[in-house]
Length: 193
Image 1 (cartoon, rainbow, N blue to C red):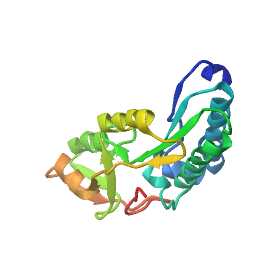
Image 2 (image 1 turned 120 degrees about the vertical axis):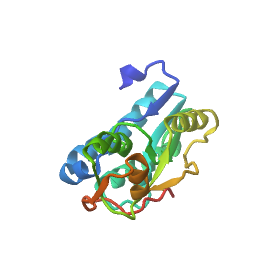
Image 3 (image 1 turned 90 degrees about the horizontal axis):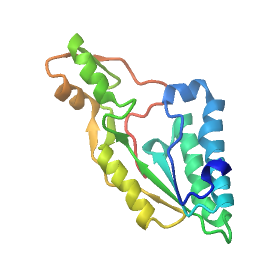
Image 4 (image 1 turned 135 degrees about the vertical axis):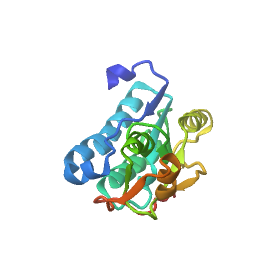
């Protein structure tokens, strides 16, 4: 990391393991990547004089009930504390927290589009909701935090929340809805703060 960050002014730390069921099954890997990886970024950024580090967080870090969310909360705490940890160095640390990026890898929308051809759409729970944002909005939010973000802060945009059942019905009207149940570690409703 020190070699990779040598001469770099801005770091956007997006590396993370993020699948809730995988975290419940492989906790050590998630701790290594999401917590110790954050510590490595902080140390290398301070040591190489990076000007600003923006760490991407998740709604699952707010009042976490699963290991993935807990590791991201720890990561958030490391980045917000890094402001004082960096001492006389000029590295600034900012966290941005948002929800699910529409059509990103792991997004439910491409999955629903794929499954509508089968005539059956599985959803976890008819009352489940998730925060959503477009890729463009997410990117602009990160850029704004680079320009205007103050070190040690967590920035959270105001995002719409979508009901998963409503989303499934709008993407695949006329398809049968199959309730498959909430996976281990999942919340019915996420929060951002």
